[in-house]
Amino acid sequence: MGFNVWQEKGIPLEKQIRNWETLDVQPYSKLDVDPYTRTRGILMNGIEVEAALFLHQFARHVEDMDLKRNLAMVRRVEQQQQKMVNWMIPASESTLEVTIGYEQVAVDLTAYLARTEPDPYVKAALDFALLEDFDHLYRYANLLEMDDGIKAERIVGDYTEIMPGRPTMDEHRHPFDSVRKHVDCKTADPLTNMHILTITAAEQQTMNYYMNVGNRYPSMLGRGLYLEIAQIEEQHVSHYESLADPNCTWLEMMAMHDYNEAYMYWSCMQSEPDPRVKQIWQTHLEMELAHLHYDRELVKQMENKDIAEMLPGEFPQPTIMQSNKDYVRQVMAEQTSLTANGTEFVPVDSLPKDHRFYSYQKMVNGNGFVPSRDVIKEHIEKRGQDYRVETEGPHPVEKLRARHEVPAEAMPY
Image (cartoon, rainbow, N blue to C red; front, side):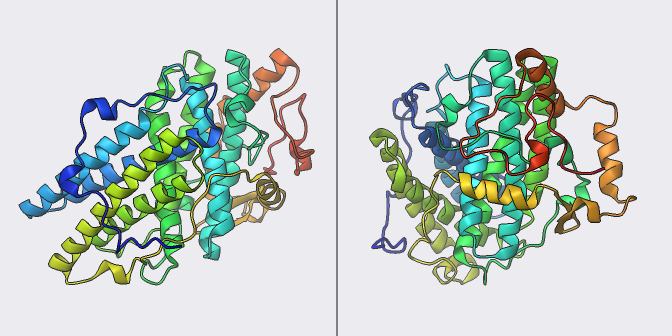
């Protein structure tokens, strides 16, 4: 593609600190912004938060003072990048409206990664969680219309359908069943390594967001919905982070993070229609290229290895935010009734009746208050039917087509 990370030097690290006026960017207009400009901003905020948190954890395991200082320098820049990206969200966009954007990220990012993922097991993991995030979008969209009179289609545009996925109340599984088999980062396709880093960062950001904003919702039902879905986001972070190779060294992981950041900023540039935002992606790409060269020298000095042997000069195919309606419907038709048993994805009716899935379900759903179900019930009571955007025809799962009553849970327990 004519772009090689080992030949492009980027902006020198010592020139990357910026002033407050530069960082305090003008937010986008929530009425005019392209839905995928919004989602790219949410995603890259998550990528930067992951970078900062990773570097803090790395520093807590380092005794070498020079290395600690190096990590602090890079981390300060990552924090500035995060502020610039996250500050694009306007104050006029409510917490719940932003939440719809978060779930659109989860749906269309996950679907695109799954469609392009070369590793069959990682693809299966992406498909599995895709249907859960798709359902979260439906639950929050019903809360948004019921409480604020705003239709979520105004936020997601014509790109993403809104209807039940794997019902959220069916998603709650014992923690033992949220851990997956990991890849070998040295032999895995570079795209697989990038996908794992990207989706882990995105889900972690969603988890963190709900952890911090869920208690600000004014109604008990809305607070409960954030509470319940936040627990599924925790499951998803466990699900995705366990795919990563734990045998990489800290320095190798740092290099992979910076490579992924550069790759994702480069990917964002490929389809960004807003010139002002595209310039942010360009600048941050040039910063991350310098970080990557910085990492390369550190690894050579401290581990006598060249990370260029692990990370290719030319990026893999770009990760693009785009509509995935047909793909989501296909996965929904085939996999809605799946659950997890250890590291595998299986039909729920294949589990023995004494499986920990059922006992865990009774613990969390057993007292009759299930916010993800009750928000649909209340919406139907107030407006006569649930809120959906089904542009491609009836729901692919017959049990989930009812609109004037709470759709039946897909799992037969």
